[in-house]
Every structure is written in C-alpha cells, then in structure tokens.
Amino acid sequence: MPKLPYADQDSDSEILVAKKLKKPDQYRVILLNDDYTTMDFVVEILCRIFHKSIEDATTIMMSVHRNGRGECGLYTLEIAESKVEQVHYTARNAGFPLKCIMEKV
Image 1 (cartoon, one colour):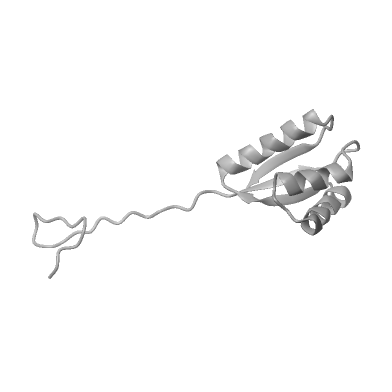
Image 2 (cartoon, rainbow, N blue to C red):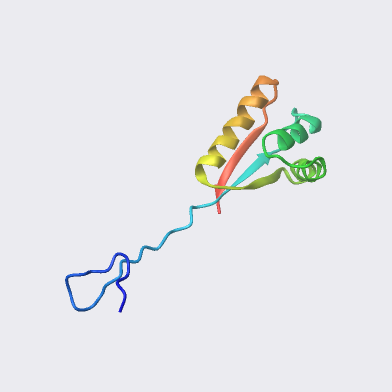
C-alpha cells in the first residue's frame, strides 16, 4: 500500500489529517436612498466602484430610488468594507450624503 501524505507513519493503521476549508462569510453591499444625491452620481458610483455596466447600474439606481435601497453585490468582509469606504469617500468629496451599508448574508 503506498504511503499517503500526512499519514501517521508510526502506527499500523494510517490516519489522514483532513482539514475542512470554510467558505468566507459573504456580505451584501447596499446603497441607501437620500433626497440629495443625484441619480447620475449613483450610476457613476456603481460603474466606477462596483464595475457595473450602464444598464445594470441604472437598474440598481432605480431600485435605490423606488425602494429606498439597492444591492450592489456580494463580497467578502474586507472587500465589502473597502467598497463601503470608497463610496463614502467619493460621495463626500462630491458633496453628496450618499450612504452605503453592508449586511452579512
């Protein structure tokens, strides 16, 4: 019988060490509606930061406008945090109060 990697070579029976890899938690990044941020700016944010097409960005922007929120995508924790920070930084620099949040899926 061939020896397998990570096998216990000191005993008669071979014991394999198996590690289960856990998928990283996912976070939904969401834009929230306000009365001041322009629709064009929201589309620009979605294209620039979330790499959405104009069509997808417009659909998400309309969801933000009609439903008060729109989902931008699912990301790991670090990426979601980075996206939220980028949105807030870009919006503040443009003079808009656009809010962006993340929710654990």
